[in-house]
Amino acid sequence: MFNWVEGLVAAAFALGLSAGADASRYDLGRTPTTAEIAAWDIDVRPDGTGLPDGRGSVADGQRLYDAKCASCHGTFGESTDYMALAGGVGTLASDQPVRTTGSKLNYATTLFDYIRRAMPFNAPKTLTNDEVYALTAYVLNLNDIVPAGAMLDRASLIAVKMPNRDGFTRQHGMGSVRGTPDTRAKACMHDCVANVRVTSELPEYAKGSHGDIALQTAHWIAPQAPASGSAAAIATAKGAGCMACHGVAKGVIGPAFVDVARKYADDAGAEARLVRKVEEGGSGVWGSAPMPGQAHVPAADVRAIVRWILGGAGD
Image 1 (spheres, rainbow, N blue to C red):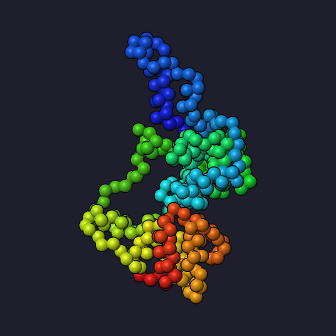
Image 2 (cartoon, rainbow, N blue to C red):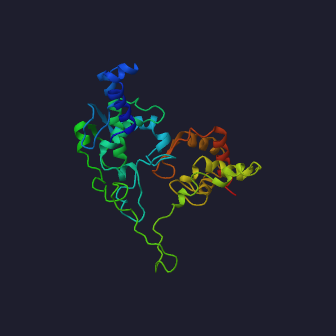
C-alpha cells in the first residue's frame, strides 16, 4: 500500500530540493540523504516488498494491544467508536455483511503497513518492527486467521492468506474511470417490487450503545433541565456504553440489570464489589464472557450506575 502524502513529500525532497540548477537558483534546501529518504520510504506492498526484518508473537501482541489499542478498538477488537478489527469473516457476500479489518482486507501485509505508519493514533511510527509484527499477529489471531501460538516474521506474514484474498475487484466505478457503477437500479415511483425484504438492520444491542443522542444534543436546541434520579442514572449508563453489552430487562453479552439487582438484593456489600468489578473488569460470575474494565468512566458515574442497578434498574 502506497501513502500518497508521504510519497509526495519524498518526491519533493528527491526532485524539488535536489542539487541542480533550480536548487541553486532559488537557494532552496539541499540534496536529501539516503537516511532521510529511507525514513519516508516505508510502504509495504501486498507481495511483502518493503517488509522489514523482525518478529513478534500473538502473546506479545496482546500485551501491546491492551496497552495501546484497546481503548479505541475495544478489548476484543469489537471497537468502541473506531474501526472494528475482528469478526465478520465470511459475511461480505451475505445480506448482512460485517466489514472489519479481518473480514475485508485481502492481504495481511496491508495490516502491517497501516499499523506501522499510522498507529497508535496519538503516536504514529513509534512502534518497533518487532512490535508491529506482534500486533499484526494478535489482530490476525482475533480473527482466527493465525493460531494463538503463532510467531510472525517477514516470511510467515507473506504466507498468510486472508479470508477475503480473492474478494477485491476493479469491476466497478470506484476501481477505474471506465468502470461500471456499483448500482444498476432504475428509477421507479410505483409498483417497483412485488415483495419487499429487509436484508439488514441495526442489532438490538447496538441501538443504545452511544446513549440517547436526542438527549445529548438537546442543549444545542433549547435549554434543558438536568436529569435526576433514575433518568440521570439511565443516561449515565447509556453514555458510558453499558447498554452495548447489557439490557435493562434482557441480557445481551452480559446479564440484564434487573437480574443483577435480584442476585444481590440481600447482599450488603454488593455495591462496593460491583463498583470494583465495573472499574477493574472480570469474568466467571455470569458465564465465561469477560467484562473489560471501565477505568475511563468517572468514579462518581460508576457508583451512580451501580446504585441504580441495585435499586432495581427502574425507569
